[in-house]
Structure formats: structure tokens, C-alpha cells
Amino acid sequence: MNIVVAQSGGPTCAINASLVGVFRQALKTEEIDAVFGSRCGIEGIIKDDMVDLTRVIRSNEDMELLRQTPSTVLGSCRYKLPMLDEEGADEMYANIFACLDKHRIGAFFYIGGNDSMDTVDKLSKYGLATGSDIRFVGIPKTIDNDLPETDHTPGFGSAAKYVCATVQEIIRDSSVYSIDSVTIIEVMGRHAGWLTASTCMLRVNNEIAPHLIYLPECDFSAEKFLEDVRAERAKHQAVIVAVSEGLEIDGDSARSGAVDNFGHKYLSGIGKALEQLVRDEIGCKVRSVELNVMQRCSSHICSKTDIDEAEQIGAEAVKAAMRGATGVTMVFKRVSDKPYLVNIETADTSLMANKEKFFPRKWINSAGNGISDEAIKYFLPLIQGEVDVFMKNGMPRHFKYSNIPV
Image (tube, rainbow, N blue to C red; front, side, top):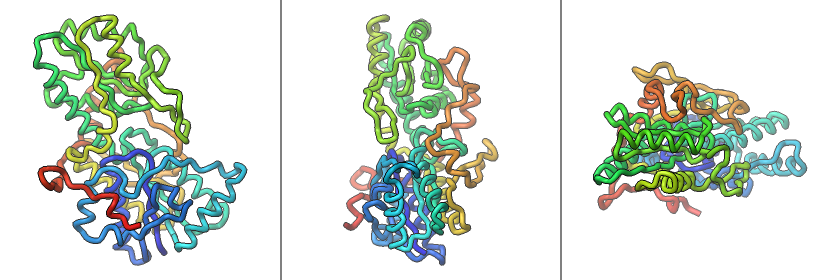
């Protein structure tokens, strides 16, 4: 058989490592003749736009460079397939399966998050309903760390490592002046605050900041926020606050009203809104810092654990498909924190499609403005190790999308 792999959703530091895992394991598997890559996620299957990955990844050096290159080398999408019973859906799915059959595809691997697992779930169900032998396997990916059923997701560890390092540098920057100040750092996280919460790890390096951490899992009051800031200003000259981008002020979100194909609202400016609130009500020096897309793809400070695990889970996906698995997503199951040990297993994709895993309330303090030390035990193993980054002219070298022949 041949296989095809695609990437979907937001980019991360580790998504290409999972692609390398699929590719490297496929080369070792006698039953697999060719490995195709679908351009721009499921859209590449719909448009019959696929590339033979042996024309892209030509050597072990290419594999090593690609596994530490951020973003999605095959391109991405946020394409939502119709429900199986929607009008016109049968024609859509018939065309997809016709493309897969044309290229003798026996297994389809989709690297992505909650919405991507929706695609895997629908395709596997249509395949089973129509008697297709094609296997559909999901490979997790998201910096939000909000996929159910898995201990964590590839991409999260590297993002958390970048966020912590950046916040620590902001702490140093904010401490140089004698004037009192408040710095509000906006971190990605629409509904789940895992990434913002990970800033608590700075305590193991003897940092006391961020002094306040706010997640979307808790109700947020402007009045209580101002009380918290005033209390911290009485103790610290430079107050550091970490907030999730999805935070709602008194139930009102800082969102634009526009939505993507999966109905997710675009977020805009909670950090700026809180900056203005502090300026108006407290009147001290205040600034907001939006980490934005940098936290997704800062591979120069990626976690070796994250990259290694991303490749491993991609390889295990191929093994699972060769055993006949379909309609499943690969997951990590943690065995222990110290020593850190995980197993890689499969879970029913329908348990993960369009579903979110929220940061545990038990790890948030009673005031809703800080994270307990118990969370550090969970986070810390995920950011360990450094990758020997390929450099050129003093800068990291990347495997370029333009390497892919048309």
C-alpha cells in the first residue's frame, strides 16, 4: 500500500517532527511502497494535490533539519468537512475516497488538534460505512494542550519553554527602573489556560513573578483584578501579570465577532484592555506585551523532549495503522513524573474531535489569580532538553517550504 500524511491547524515547533516520524517509520515498513504528503491539509486530498515525500526528504540530514524546523512544511488549513448526513456530503466524501483509491492509499495520517480530529473521525466513519479498507489515524498537535484523552500534546512543551524564557526576560527588563510599573503579558489560549499557567514553572528558578496569573477557566472581575494589582504593587516595584488571550472581563470577551470555519471567534487585545484599565484606575506606568505567534514557532529554544516525543508518536501512528487501527488518535499516557515516563497508546478519535481539555481547577488557587506547585510537577518534564540547532551565518537554518517540488 501507499500512505499519505497531512498537517492541519496552527503551526508549532514539533509538527514537522511528527511528519518525520511518519516518514522514517514508513521507510522501515515493508508493506508501505510510497509516502505522499497532502498539501494544505485535507484540501490537498480534495484537490488531488499531493507530493511524493521521497522527492522532498532526500537524506538523513534533511530529516534532522526538518524535525527541528517549525511550522508546517506541507502547509495547513482550517477546512471543516460537512456532516455525513448534510446535503452534498456524499459527493464530497466520494471524491475524497476516489482520490485516495487513485493513489492506492491504505492509510491516512492527520497531524493536528481538536478540529483536525473532527476530520479523522468523519473520514473513518464514512470509510467504515462504505466498506473501505483505508485506515485513518490522528496524530496530536497543539500548543494549547487542550486535547482530551492525552496527557499532553506535541508542540506544547516547546511553546511553554519559550513563554517561560520570554517572561523571565521581561522580568529582568522591567526591574531596571526605579519607577513603579505593571507589565501585562498576553499568552495564547482561547478557552484553556495551559500555556499561561505554565509560567508558574519560573518559581523553580527562584523567580517570584509572574505575581498574578489569570486563566479563562475562572471568572474574571475587573474590580477584583484591580484589587489584586494594588495588593501586589504594595509588595513589588515591578508587577508582572500573565493572562490568557481568551480571558473575559466580567463575562464580556475582547473578541472581534468574526469566526473561522469551525466557529471559533477571533480574539483581540485582552492585554491592551487590561493595560487601559490599569492606566485609568491606578495611573501607574503600565504596558502590555502580546506574545502572539512567536510562542508557536520559536524553535531556537524548543524542548528536546517535545521534539523527540513528536517524532515518536508519529512513528507509533504508522505502527498502529499497520496493525489495522482506524478512527483512532495516538495519545500519551503518563506513567510517572519523576522519573518522567509516558506510554504511547491509541484513543477513539470521537472522544477528541471538537472537544477541549481544560486546565484543572484543583491547580488554581482559591483567589483565581495563581497556580499551585502541583502543576509544576506536571509541566516541568515537558520542557527538558535542548536541541542542537542547525545554524547558518549566525542564525537558525530551516527546511524551507520551497524545497517541495511543484
